Amino acid sequence: MSLASILLAAAVTVPAGVATHADGRAPIESLYRASLSLVDRGWTAEVIAESAPSGSAAPLPIIALTSPGRGPAVWILTGVHGEEPAGPNAVAASIEDLARLGAARPVVLLPLLNPQGYARNWRYLNVATYSQDVDGQSVGDSSHLLPSVDDAARARAAAASSPEAAAVTAWILARQADYPAAVSVNLHEDNLIDEGYVYSQGVRGAQDPLASSAVGVLRAHGVPIRMSGTTRFDEPIEGGIVGPVTDSSVDELMSAREVVVDGRVLPGPRADTVLVLETPAAALPLAQRVAAQAALLGLIAKELAAPAGGR
Ligand SMILES: [Zn+2]
Figure 1: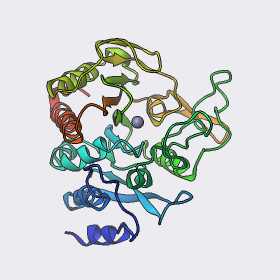
Figure 2: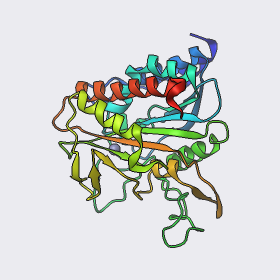
Figure 3: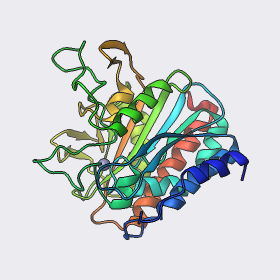
């Protein structure tokens, strides 16, 4: 281990009293350790925020890793919803692939965006599950930066819904100068569906070839995909793919042509490809969900590292 990674590992030592939910997911310490091993490959690690929502045992860092080279980048995001362990576990299992990709082109990795949620099996910062009565604070909430549907010169919300969302979204926008998002992939899952789908939110929309590659690799790994019909939010599905939606998520931020920062309209990240995986969680064992999402990361690493990829 390099000096830098030792220092950073010390900074993210998980305090006593933070347990990890016992469903077979990797201990949270091992997730931090896996991502921070990229520092030994020349990547830079940063702490975006110390997350300490009300009721949490002790603060946990939200970390980011950036590969050595700068330029149009592949962004990998996981762990927005704490009760969806497959993505963070798949990233930890795919460090070699991500290291290889990062040697070929710029990569930004946000490996565990809601560490408190992961530790507590809570979807949001403030509540464990979705409910109609309480506004769940999502780490990825971007409503304070996305243009209002009625008035594009104003943001949808006056302020960020949490300090974590403020810090994460500000960090994402700040890094666009050196690591402009060309491709963004956000690994989610959903325990209320038996067949998954892939949102394709980028400028390329539902026709993005990488979205159909993603559908193919998930199916090849035994993940049932709903190929037509609608999502549980009534959005139309074609070929397992859902086109751009307005949901105030960090993925909508990644695809945004314009953003509103402190009342000023500025160019948004405008990523060509923005994929959001929703793999079904209820009927599939965690190990299989992790393997399928890791296979997707492997495919992305292979396709996007190749010079002929044209991205
Ligand atoms: Zn989710």
